Length: 200
Image (cartoon, rainbow, N blue to C red; front, side, top):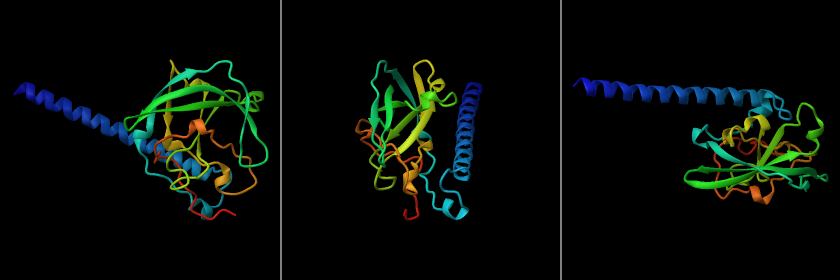
């Protein structure tokens, strides 16, 4: 009887600990989303910010990826929505699993940002998926990280933080278009959705 009591107590402790962890993650994501809305670089008024839309926060889209560093990658002009391409190179390759599907994404480094002392460690992960053009922005979405975020050959990627390029809200920007190699064969129902206001 005593062993059963101890086992039950341990089970409840594990469940309570997991619930607390999930609540902490939800709170952190809600704070992240609030800050994203309030400090948006293009959508600045409260009226327009009301049109920002997001998928429900889902911890299953926060994934631990294996990171393969790619050396001696050549610079190439990444196409944009405007007239000016932007030079990038492949910095690494991510391998991860979502809903039992093994996926890959390339991580890119910007040639321009290498000249900036503050941003030279910045890494860029543009992607498209099966929601693109339907539930999410047609030209794809972005994730970002820094070199320091890669630890022991792994990187935690959180698609709940995926965001739209500025071109989703207005014209006049040169927004990088995700290379075809970063088109995921599944729907990523996490992060930012289509902007709810008609773009002029």
